[in-house]
Length: 554
Image 1 (tube, rainbow, N blue to C red):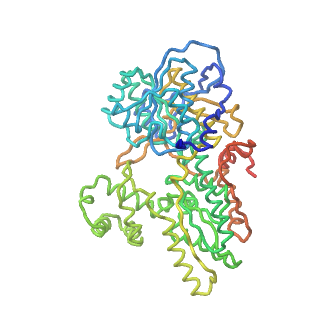
Image 2 (image 1 turned 60 degrees about the vertical axis):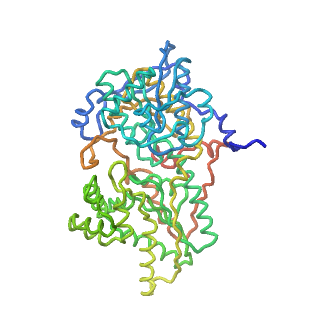
Image 3 (image 1 turned 45 degrees about the vertical axis):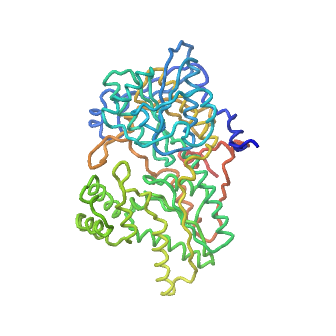
């Protein structure tokens, strides 16, 4: 008996042909706009990137036929997985082959470390075809190695010279594209002839600006999470006895949480940026949750759903200050590392913090305090994703409800179930939107390379229109950068995009959340991602994108 290795959907998706903007379907010409500048810290960024700063925005338009020289390109998948990464590579491969059939594409294995360690494969048609319209990054693997040392750049240049590689495409998030910007600057300064192009990836949705309307993977991941939330809401409305506290990925911004709320309409949704703007304490957040639970209980509704962003703790001002102090205190701190027990570490931290942060630290349950001092992430920061905020809130809410019941102010029943949705959405089969968007990004990268550009990120705009009307181009990566403190030092990084409280998505949410929190049944059950059927079911972008571009979502 033959072993089955592909599902019927995988087999069907292999034949899906992603849609492209009209400009990418023929010969092209680049139209350059005005010079650009960084979002902040202009002098510092310009000083650090003299060769790639101030470049113009680029729009790709139909043009005349021309002969394209033979090129070889290397591609790197960097950071966490996001649906559509394989299609960026497919679009890049197809774009290169359309420019010149003799062009070659190499994949560096395991992320940026593959460039440094000279681990690679040539991506042939047979390999690429196996991964069309699939989720995951397993075609060449990914990694989180940071490219920030000169010896790494030199090793990368060596393998590029050996293979005749003219350009490197880095597919990643804000940190990965910061790496791309640094690499582009170094190779320009050294006149190596190696171009570097970035592609915007992150399910968190925090890599965006006026030219990068959304990062790829955000659409698919949010649809996966929203399906699960809808399923839970249907269960909650059936059993009528549980409150579901659901933590969602997104440490640095609440885009995923807000988008999932717009798709599923839970009873409560906490937005970290609002918590910070209103200077709320942890107790304030708890009181807000408790008020909804008590209100629903008065109407006999002892159930509901609550969405919580992964990074909530870090947005509570007092906690944010504490975490910033811990990041400074514990970065490469050998004295702290040498301590053995949790109690020793706790006492050491308390002795080193400011009085204000010491009070906050003392007030935390020991489990949460311990999580704040666990191993750091690759950037030296607290691993907020390890903090089980949903369990902390359940504990605090339960205690508050006991107090209210004793005071005669609450007569309901409270039973809670906690969930964390993260990895479930990172490698899903990409939605039609992400399949089309990522393929277009890869194709755009091939055009930017053929035109000799470096230090640019591929850009596709007008994303709420049909794909044929999308606008392809490039945006200088330096345009997105500012200076931030990392590992105790000021470094250039791409500025993360947070949920804008005056933006259309949040304003819409703000206008309807009281209805969601009340006794009316407002749940929406989005169901699974649909790949075949009417365009209004299969090809729609996120609610966030539609609202940002003035579209009516219902």
